[in-house]
Amino acid sequence: MQKSFTDQMGREISINFPPKRIISLVPSQTELLFDLGLDQEIIGLTKFCIHPIEKFAERTKVGGTKKLNIDLIKDLQPDLIIGNKEENTQSDIEELAAYFPVWMSDIFTLDDAMKTIAQIGELVNRQPEASYLNHLISAGFNDLKTLALQNHIDKKVAYLIWRKPYMAAGKNTFIDDVLLINGMTNVIKEDRYPAVTLEKLKTTNCELILLSSEPYPFGEKHIEEIRETIPNAKIMLVDGEMFSWYGSRLVKAVQYFFEFQKQLY
Image 1: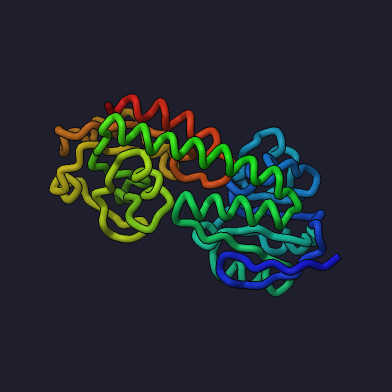
Image 2 (image 1 turned 90 degrees about the vertical axis):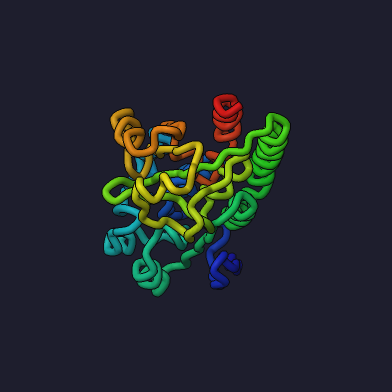
């Protein structure tokens, strides 16, 4: 049967419900679909949708999140495409939407992420599974927020995502909200992902610099490089998936942040 839904950009789509041929264009949302109990319904995903790895190997790769293989997607004839405003390009989405139903998320906070889980659960007929995931995420992150307050974690932090030039997660990002929940105040006041020099970062008097594993793979050598300019800050390598993936990965992230917070007491 046909059923209508409104995505997070206010666009209404009509799909054959429940959908049987789904293409996911975002890694965290792909993982969510599998964790909701879907399997053969997912016919295509991007080359970055690596979790779960055994499912990744079995599926058609439709390009990268920013550079999709439109012709291949057309050949697959999906009855639903699921994307994200930040991860996918407007031109790709507009072209695909002329042929197929495309549902888009637009996420800035943990609340947004949980809303997305609920809406995707409804979209693919997995509402009970989505509700259970949200129960675990809500309880876990509420506990994390409480622990950060109880242990007086109050750190001024910069979260770097890129090098040459250095780029940081700023305001109005999912990462910024996750930092705040865990007792950290972002020293980057610009929106989204601004470029930043180490000299400018030094003037913020940040106490903690987090180097993400993605999209740039920071390593130990970069800690030394940054320490030369900012010797008084604590510099740590962190798992970018835990800070920036906003699907079912958030369940695993709870335990990660319990351990992470212990390093900040």
